[in-house]
Image 1 (cartoon, rainbow, N blue to C red):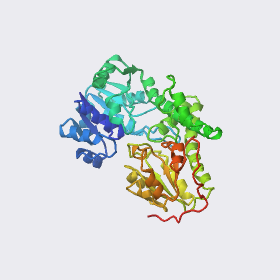
Image 2 (image 1 turned 60 degrees about the vertical axis):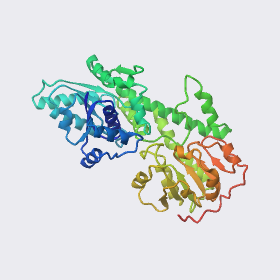
Image 3 (image 1 turned 30 degrees about the vertical axis):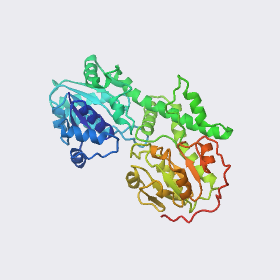
Image 4 (image 1 turned 90 degrees about the vertical axis):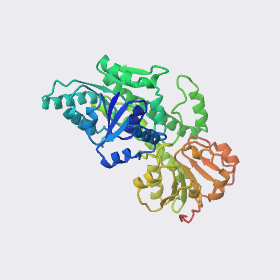
Length: 460
């Protein structure tokens, strides 16, 4: 089939590349000339395992094309996907100007039947608005004879495993106005459902809300566990044991029950706020989601308080090693990453930070900029030299089974603030570490750490 993907951000690029990998002819359109030129040369603007190889292979074999010419992409395609950004406005609502702008352009150039599919995450009613814009632009051109259908097809891609998520989806949701459009889309996605039909066809409003509801539900589970973790520390319970206890219940399941320092990324924070705003616009108060968002923000402050309390409020001049900067492993995405709140707060308190991330160092430097007391290293152990403690912010596999004896030798004191509960505090205590986790008992049978004397703050 012939497909036009408008927007080569995370969703558009992964979707376009995976569709080409399955034999379709795909035109990916973007207004950024430099980005298009780089993509034509096989240079990928994001880090996503396996994506670069798929792009290079399909460009070389002629199935995947990148262009700035929207008219070219639309003219050659039956399916036209809108996959542009919907960044949040100041009030939390989704900024839809890029979606509506693309709809105008499509209406100005299409000459025959098209299926226009909104792929961007949008509030209920957006796809119908796209339909209105397309009809308006055709009327301006005196071409009301050009037929088209609209649909909404949300993405359910997890950064770091997006290729597998697309190739082996849990479900494919489409919102359509008629069975003909649904059948066309079912045929397009059939190669990804060879073993089992996971195609869910529903109304457009239901599909639009399904995307927001899914992310809001997952965010709710995370915030619930984080709030429960604080209670665990008050009463001597262990959140990891509780996770196992409730996760084994088939009605609950084990996914997204990990306590930590809160969710981040491009989806959960933005989508929770957008759903809250959308509900308010219709006269509904989603009070649970408002609390979910508050708990998520409070969790990072709570983690900072744990560090501050451990050193009795005396952070000035203390040097800390930070492992992990991206909002989750297997990506360089820094959007809403906990590190963007925690690191500046520690610096403001006078601490010195030396940080390492397997792939996100460059992105972090671009966002955080040049700051007094902040530096980066390209080796995870190099950041440890002379540091008061190790602060783990992202659960990269690299950090799960490190050389603890080497860590102890390099740190000024054997202290780890584990923001992702990667380490068992009892086991760490046996190895001579003080490990401060989330919702877990702190074992300190080892020698009491002298928390009153800061290091000299020098960066090696």
